[in-house]
Length: 405
Image (cartoon, rainbow, N blue to C red):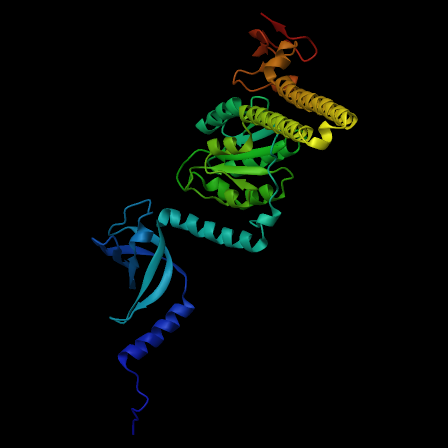
């Protein structure tokens, strides 16, 4: 005979099923076609995800769907990442969607998440392993497209904030199947140069697919093992790539990377001036205090009476004043000399001063610096830039002097 003493209510059974499902499927990734799509006035999205044989309910709340980069609709093939849950009132299991992408880039998203998880476990994102970015770099290498707006924006900022810093541009592909290997080669080229203190890699904004080369595993490992600190500046502030995560510092945009990389020379000069002013004021305050102390003591009866004591104390004060005066002049002279030396050093590093001393820079027709005579062919024209202007020239041979005209 059947016993019913231990029977469960519908709610109790549903609750047990809910606990079982949610504890075992806390995060799932599933692909399917959208149907019965409803974007409720509350902002939440409700729809069915189906394939040829099955379907399941999906809900994506307003806080999550507000960041979608596409408009879901019936018939759209999508990939969803979320939590499997049970809607107890109806006894239905459903997915609470956390992220949704069109299936075309859904595969990329899955690959991105998988690589991120693996590199995280290996420690490539650990803050303790990141190198410090130099406060005053003398030479910065840039890896980006030579024709992109990102490079132009960075060069403008460097010229304004730190004209004394040398910039080496290593052009590289930043989009397409060959981009990641080209960026790796560029990092190796720049890191092999001893004078390079810092490397910036990046590009302007683009779609998830456009930025995909910066999610390459080989590139991530090259950034991690590079001996020089690297700033990653890929896309816009909302774009996050594997390169950003593994780099020593992430900048939201290429322009922001340039701002972060160098200190403003005018701000440095102003800081020195402010410190000199504060030092002078401090010394003058000390002198004023000493004189007030002397005046108070000189008015006392026991000092007025014995003239010899007064005279001796006055000599001490005179000597102290003289010592302070000498100290003031010495400190001011040292600070002034430091400021002049700093300015002279910064000015000496200016490329224009180097050119004015008789040096010149050779550029090819793409305005890239010629570092080796073999970089151009015999008979090929190029430009020589001097301190007084530019002139055109033609290479005759590797063993003959180049002649301008």
